[in-house]
Image (cartoon, rainbow, N blue to C red; front, side, top):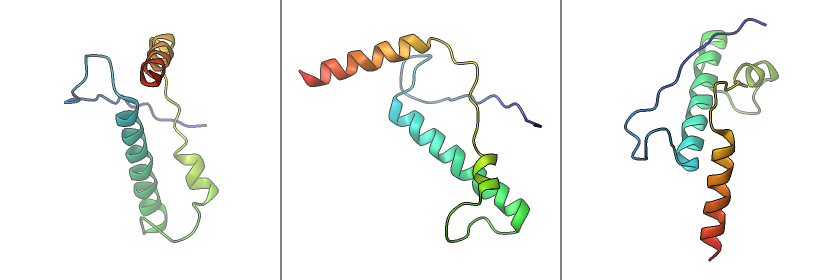
Length: 88
């Protein structure tokens, strides 16, 4: 499979360096997927959106793989800590 490698840098987020809130990350990923779907569909079909379900080829094309994650255990530890603190 032919792939392209991109580096995504996030600037201007008001959290400590090397961190991002889970909701901000979700919004970022949602926008990345939606923008990619529309751009790819426009280049292939001449329109950026159509009613109905996404075609399988389009869904598969925007199934990104994120690599280079660091401190994965730290992320889980922070999530556990947040849940514990919110239960109190």
